[in-house]
Image (cartoon, rainbow, N blue to C red; front, side, top):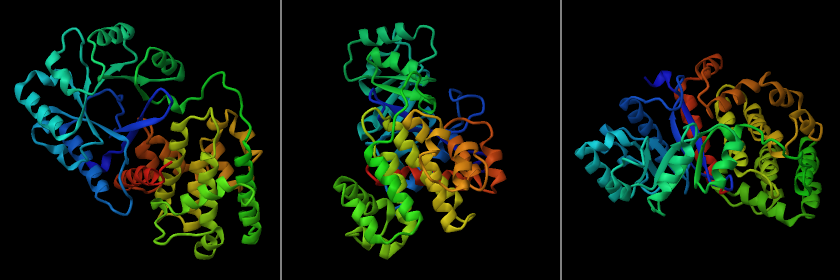
Length: 404
């Protein structure tokens, strides 16, 4: 039943920590590797298809890939035909492809343009004829013979076949798999700090953005803001690009900062600057962290709509955006907040996940893993699972509309 289910997303990364796409599935208290019911996948497909048809929020994942578990029964009934073909990858368990009808259904979907990812396949016994249909093969990172399985798949000499390491729990495993030449990596590793990294200082662009944010909070005249921005044409360009992106849905082109403030006020400008701060990066930053921060910010903001005043919901966006600054800068959040002047309520949420904003960002974070307490967290906020799931999908689509 929908009222008991929450969508969880898992990014798939490449060797440069960029997001190739996401696997979307239902929260599973018994572990991410367990099987799900056919009706559950059918319900998930319907929710995703509804989002894909929502012209206001845009394409769900843009040009990134959407991975979905695909039980054989749904392959045969063409349940995935409502999803975009080029962006959808159907993850099929090898054990279900011993049936001729299932194979024919898979061939038909592949001919239509859907991608195929193979799970639980043994390279020594897999039907080699099936591999011409497959774009990805998934190998559990926890397998005792992981390296041997990689070697066996490589020995088949199929250069178009991308090997995915699934279930990575940390960056050390990621680095090892990347050194072995695997092409994609799945797991919650991005939520863990990298060991041995040096704390980073705010770069000049971020320092300038923080200065602008402080000026906006103090309500200084827009001419003063423009005079600061004139010192960095790149920031000015990027800020206006964000303001005019589809994700903000303004309906008219903003020509200048003064135009933006006159039309919309200072509060939206603070949101844009928060977005710019987390993405005004130099080399050494993890792209997956930046994209996660954007999704968290929008997700938390949407969760607060209807429950908090508009200005408070906009603060949720800032909290979500800043929730990964400690990871991005490689320093404790306490040290990061010493450099940023934020309200006590925002700081409390970032440090303890308490206060007026904390529970919303905590719920958004819980949907990035199979956390057992998602239902209780949503219930405490009086937010239904359907509202959570719709906000989650809308946040994914909104992040794509920014073209980060």
